[in-house]
Image (cartoon, rainbow, N blue to C red; front, side, top):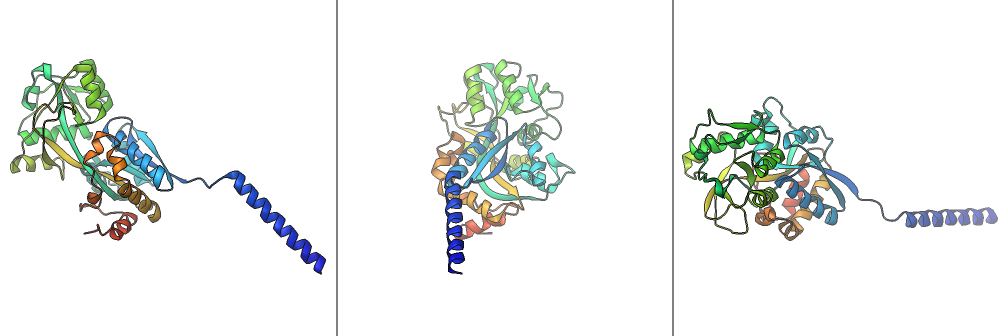
Length: 325
């Protein structure tokens, strides 16, 4: 019996040593992989690339950007649970949840807020040498036109409503997405383009066409109310002249709306918690990523909005004393 016991002990020890050695050779367990929906270029791509980098380095996760032609394409992918995270503006997320506006008749009820990121400051850009000084001056010029439910259409409607300008009879050149619009502006086949202030496309357009000008909008209460009929929760910001940002040769009022990170409601609470925690703790890394991130404030991640937050995000914000909803 002693011999059998000794042999059993030795065998168990040998098996344990073999398993330990095999695990050592295999190295540490790979971090869980999650995806984040994004666009193939432009401001959204820059925003999500920075999030993915910080999360992959500091959250014990591997976050991989999954690019689509536009936000409308990845909204239903996240809603179905085939993609964990995504980023978009606040009004497009609102439309998606409720099945209104850009998502008319197609509600996506499984989306939950993770964080408010930064204000997106968006405007129509023209070349300074064009002589165009106002949105009304675009009548008769070649403007980008989009499908009825496209983001570009709603930005046009919001801008025109703010300025109380009718665009009936204007010359719209149809483009399928924002990258094609920017390409058209760079080639000189479009006289104006929509872009986020400080984004890479504005720098590319400046390199191709020279100095740019931002077309201003109004900041009075009635103008903002008209704009919000098309772009819920949008607002107006006054930006100071900044020679480092294309188009900002002087102070100008521009459209703004918050950008958001969101997730499918069934993404694990711990995963969302870790994403929010990494972003909060590495806020400096995010702000250093690209100019778009410079206005990011970790204290505003839990900003009150008319959208439900994911439980994992709520848990982190409560721990930090940030939850006020």
